[in-house]
Image (cartoon, rainbow, N blue to C red; front, side):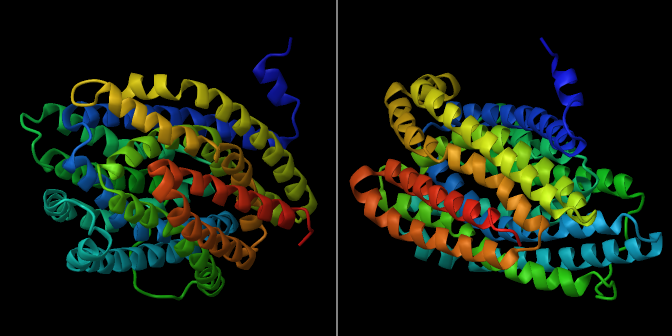
Length: 442
């Protein structure tokens, strides 16, 4: 019987790099998601399904969607550029990194101020279904989530720099905000308001941003002095690719706010129920699929740079098929164990058995997305390494259009479970589109 080390050594070097990177990412993700799970257990224990959790879930989703969208779009197009830049002279690399950081700080600062100023209108439009108490708490939470917009952009750039060197410690540090929130919530003497959630969020994002910047600077061998200029030769192609990619990312980024808007209008703490199910689902999605996806992009970009496009395509298709099967197995197992898992993580304190049944029901319908999500993520990295950003943007717009139609069709009859089913249908469309595109040679 071959050991895991022997099996890895028998693989082609490119498959081995992806597998080894995926195992490192999966290990870090597992630790990080465990920290996140403990945080959710603490929040459930101290707050239950309440107005405070409604406010936190709504604010986190709505305030984070634009910063996360920008980071998602930029990371996909930035990592291949950073991979290519590794062979350049030090002054040119320093110039590009400095200009990248300068514009990140400038855009992040403007975004943070705009979010805080615009939040009353966001509450009036998207949060109309929240209770007056939850709406008030949401306004208070923006004292943390507005600065977090700047910190999220800075963290995303540092993470991309690390991933370009096939270093994945950023995955572990994604859990820093959750750990700080966990500590703050458990040490707080009173949890009738959102103070522990507010300060835990702000301090957690700040520590994560500083820590990742130090690690990225060490990996690159330089810090890069921030500068508001566009002198680096990388900017024209990067801006063009990022602009196209941003269209798709913006479309997909509206999925979260649409879900929150739909859930808020369902009433009866649907936001909190959906939030607990979503965060438990993200544990499975992250450890299973994101590990391979994050490990694959720098490897596929390197293969493309060597001029072996056919090997990159074949490698990605093999991994996609493997992940599709793995996702199907996880779905079957998760469907059977959903009530047990929810009870294990959340059922204590203010979170009762009735809450467990409600969250488990929503979670089961969300599990249907697993095979398609697992399978599509590696194909996303393939198309990104091929610079096929227009096709990726078109697929993302189609996904959003389907989601926008399915939410109002399914949610009124199925409640929060209908929102999850709509997401599963969306990922089925996404997988079908990406497979069709990947099978065609660029």
